[in-house]
Length: 291
Image (cartoon, rainbow, N blue to C red; front, side, top):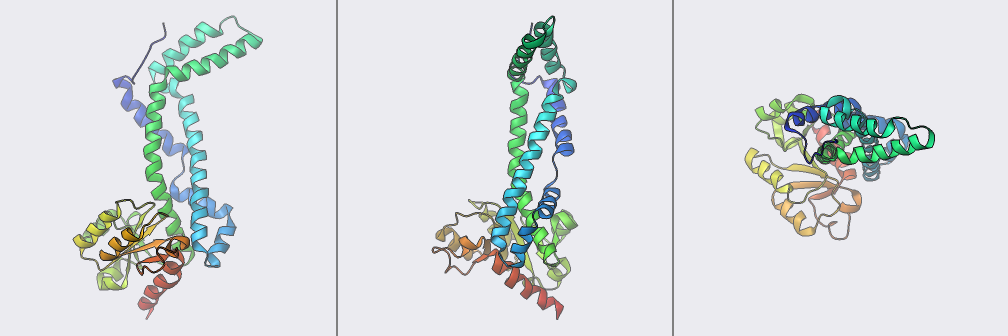
């Protein structure tokens, strides 16, 4: 008799979760790897940067990088579901019974139809595993969007020749030693400059969308006593009232050109475009330290 399961047996849960992590590491590239590949495959985006059309380049890089990630995700999902019966006993038992009951003594078209039926029924019988996998993928997608955005920005820094230190580059402990929390992602030109004169550095954080999370950045400014912070975002729904609130907390928002120069926000001095940020603000800081 085919076992009916409405949830993954406890003895298999941890094994399956660890298998998801293992297969993910094996078959899904990191954000940095994908961004590197997209840059190599789409030289036209580099010409946009050279022409100071950075906002359009970032938007397209994000879109292409996301598509690459989804392609990896499809491959990862197919392989782990293919191997499910090799990893766990319950899916193996279900598949063995389905094959035994439906394949023996069948040939040709009848065999083909039986295989099709088995595929459908097997997917339904192991649905708790599919659901668990789906939850894991949803969580990963949320964090992946932010990591990809960061990888793109850091790649732009490198392409334009801007030095920077980031938590991923020098380690969380280094930032902690400066009294900077996890909300600060990077410092331009470097940590040594921050130690010497923090008002002549760019302290950056990145968020794909703002919602209420910008308030975490405001709290970080108050806690660490930094003069201001640049909040880089891909959010296209920034209201004037939210922009004013952020201005009150010394947050400079770096957004797409069409957002920063929109009718509602173009008069806001704390909302700047990626173009202004990369070709005006950063060079001013870099030039100060070259003197």
